[in-house]
Image (cartoon, rainbow, N blue to C red; front, side, top):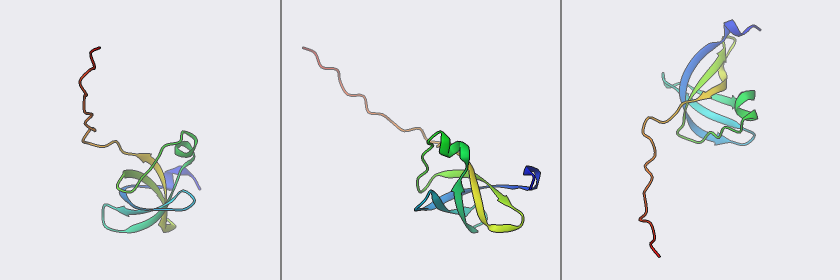
Length: 87
């Protein structure tokens, strides 16, 4: 199957399953079983519950998807600066 037949969707990870499988909820509320693609696996990109992801789905099986991109968080993490010690 060629890549131009793939449906690209966005969703949110709701559960982490064994074997790099995930339950993801699409923006329309549909829940699919997703696994990570080769580039994410190769570069050790960590995916946790609550992450927003971009996925590809085959038009023949709308129950499964391949995670191709993990979206960056909108709110950056705040780091607390500790006062420097003076000796």
